[in-house]
Length: 111
Length: 116
Image (cartoon, rainbow over all chains, first blue to last red; front, side):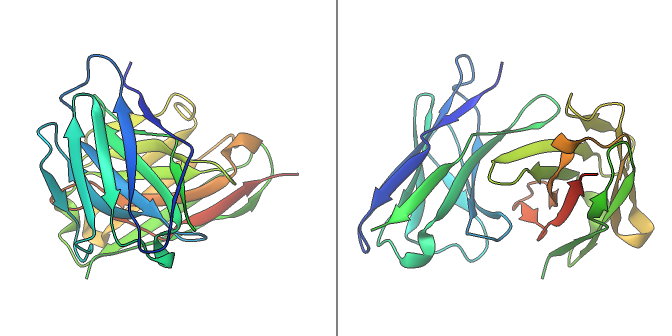
């Protein structure tokens, strides 16, 4: 069964950096995932896709301080130079046989 | 500019029906698979349904299968979700989304509340 696992929360200081992790279930190491940001009281916003080789493709207008990487079954979203507006929920998502599958989301707090 | 605008949400009693719409602009609607995703209050994103670009293929989450119907009218750039036999657990903000190529786009959502 295709499952994405995310830590519930993460925090980092203003101006610092944070790395979020999305873990693919066993047997799905080669899957591409997408990252989405959801700021408080807003709809989701697509950030990027991250492939199994670590390459990533960002969405329109996504700042350079957002990047992605990969290691085995883990897909990462790295946010550098954290700003207050980065405080949000972040969801990873992938493509199943006939559906989208979401992780549970990680709430990022900017200290 | 790509835009997806949902409408049709509201308060409905358990067992009732509601039809959501999503009007697309800024891209060739008929070329893309489309999805509905929902988010219960304080919870995460959950995929609901998808439809192929030509409308011939549809898929549903088990939780809504047999109760919800996704459809599209490409001539009107419109995606719909017919929701029947609504339950309290269907209470959520419903988002329409365009599948990847090369970006995924989301609407702003419409709130559905199922309550007596």
